[in-house]
Structures are given as C-alpha cells and as structure tokens.
Image 1: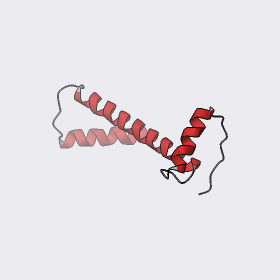
Image 2 (image 1 turned 45 degrees about the horizontal axis):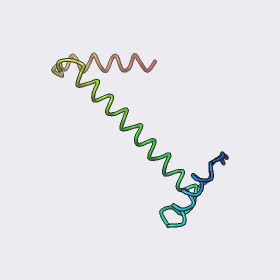
Image 3 (image 1 turned 60 degrees about the vertical axis):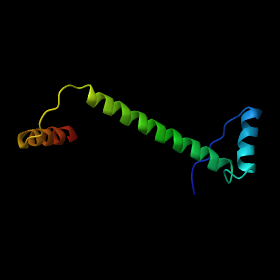
Image 4 (image 1 turned 90 degrees about the horizontal axis):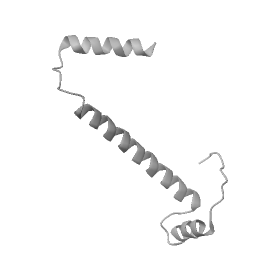
Length: 83
C-alpha cells in the first residue's frame, strides 16, 4: 500500500503498548495498528452522525405523507441545490 509517511512522537508508555499489541499478534506491525484505530474512529464518527440525523428526524415534528407533489418538490429543491 503506497501512502504518505507521517512522523510523530509518542510517550514511551504508548509506544510500549503498541509494540505489545504487535508482538502478541493482534497486528502485523505498528502501521496496521494505527490504521485500524483511524478506521474505528471514522466508523464511530459515522455512527454519531447517523444517530444525530435520526434524532433530528424523530424530533422534527409530525410526519408528512409522501405524495407525488412532495416528491416533485423535493427533487426540484435537490436539483436547485446542485447548482
């Protein structure tokens, strides 16, 4: 996998922890461990965004029936927003 190299300092305790995770076979190397942490954080953020959207929908008021005219209006608003 080609990518950009990133350098940063870690306290010895964190570096030892990462080394232990790699040594015990949980990860193949340090980069794998860090990539996994970042992916998990991305997943967590996506879940939080989805949860906030669902909460917003639930608290937005009474549901409106989905009629043909409403679908047409929503499509028009979506297309206007693209420009």
